[in-house]
Structures are given as C-alpha cells and as structure tokens.
Length: 148
Length: 139
Image: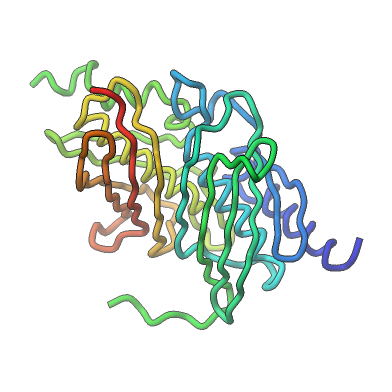
C-alpha cells in the first residue's frame, strides 16, 4: 500500500465511521484511488421510499452519491469540502433487496472548486440507477464574499 | 373542518414511507399549502466539526417535500417517480429544525416541475434549494 493509498483509506474510514449520517445509513467504504472513490449502502427495509415496490428512497441514493463525491475530492486537500450543487438523474429504480454501490470521479480541481461525476449501480456502472454531477468548494479555499 | 383528520393524504403518505420515518420528518397543512418539518436529530449530521446536517439529508428532505406536495395536489394513486433533481447548497444546515416548502411550477399530463426551498430560523435566508422533475402516476 502506498502512502497515498494509506491516506485515502484513512480518510474513507473516518467518513464512514465518524459521520453520524453515514453510520445511520450503514454506508461502507469499498475502495479508493487518487481522485476516485467507491462506497456502498446495504439494502434495509427502513430505508425504503415506496412501500408498494420496496425500492430504496431516492434520498438514500442522493446521500450516498454526495458522500462518495466527498471521498473523491478528499485526496487532494485532506478531506474538507462542502457541496455547492449536485444534480442527480434517476435512470431507473434500484432493485429491491440489493446493495447499491456508488463510484465518484473528481475530473477537475481548481484552486477552490472540485468538479465531480458519480454513478450509482448494483452490478456495474454501465447499468446505472442514477448519475450525479456536482461542484464542491474545497476547505481552505478563499472565502466568497458575504451574501447581500 | 374535517381535512386534518386521519384520511389526510399528508399523514397517510408520511406514515407509509419507512425512509420518511428514518429522517423523522413531518408536515403541517394550511389549506393547500404544506410546510414540511425536519426536527434536528444527531443521526442527520454529516459534518461533526461545524457541526452541519449532511448535504444528502437536505437534498432528501426537499425531494420528499416535493413528493408530498404532489401527493396533496394531484391525489396520486401511486407515488410520483423522481426523474431528476438539482440541489443548491446556500448555507451550512445547522443542528436545528429545518423547514421546507414546495412550489409546483407546472403540472403536465405526465410530468411535474417542482421548486423547493429549505430554511431554518429565517425563511428569507434559505439553507438549500431544489428543482426537480417528477413522473406522475395515472390519475
């Protein structure tokens, strides 16, 4: 394991073990590489959004995608970032009873902003449940001017 | 005044959704206006340093608010399905009660466009906003 890998694994470990909402959803760390992260959430009956279908709530996928985007961003700046915006397209319902994975790739860093894409899926990213595109403000970046 | 009784679609909708109970959200109706309420709870925290609510939780709460408002307005047999959402984060969500209100901008034959705003202590200083499209079920 390189020092980069060890650093990312430590960040990811904190993100899943020390973030109360990640603990509550049962988000698990799967893997990380520079600018890339994968996490998953296990199917649970109390996270269902539509009792008629047993499909996980969209909000669970939203939180998983947001969280894994944070992991993809964390390698360059020590872990601190805040979501500026997040756009999510829901291609199809998640399959009831199955765990959902999410993979995020940070494809551009500026001094203050990271641009990230992410995909949620059960088996492979080529068959997505949802895709996300987001912009994240990096911790330590110059503060924006106060809102009027 | 029978419209706040047990057959209120708001109460029925929320009670039937496990994830709404996981978040701990509720809602108040004033005629056809609905304010969704998300009381603070420690499990909603996403940043322990600030501390702040998880961005995903704010997004999820606003999406659920849109679905709730559509269920009230459109008397849906089945829950509408989310097609897409765009979430804008304006301020950190502090460990306080969060409110949200949905504005149904357009209802077409199959698709609705909804804007949602979430705030905490001050309505004029929203913490987050959401715009989304939702696929309606047959009426």
